[in-house]
Length: 154
Image (tube, helix red, strand yellow):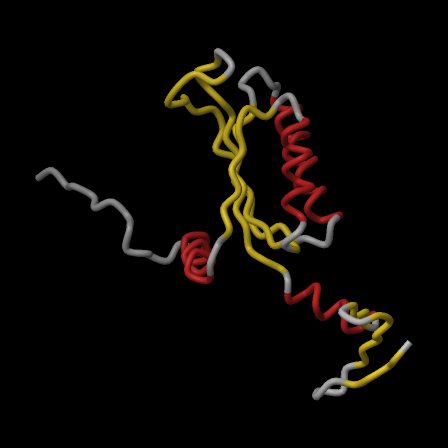
């Protein structure tokens, strides 16, 4: 085993050629660098009761936090009509979750979403810095420039 220091005095361990193992401090720094902002939209089946709907939301938010993620914002839209029928259902319970998580976490979350029978559809979106800024402004109530103009009838 060879131990060497990089330019900024970080300890690296080299066991075999092409394999670098980092010290725990460096590993933690690398994990924090690999955090990415995501938005998840889920359409749940409309036959869920209010308690089941809340339990399903809690299940996925706890999955994010258990895997070193952070829930930024969640928004339950409620019952909306679908553009086309999915599994012979014309309505669905919409839920949007904005979160930060390691880049490899989405595969675990996708597996859980596909296994859950109450989920009709789901969609992940990776958010860039502009989308994160836009969402933060929208949550604070600051005008973003995309609002519809109000028509006042005189």
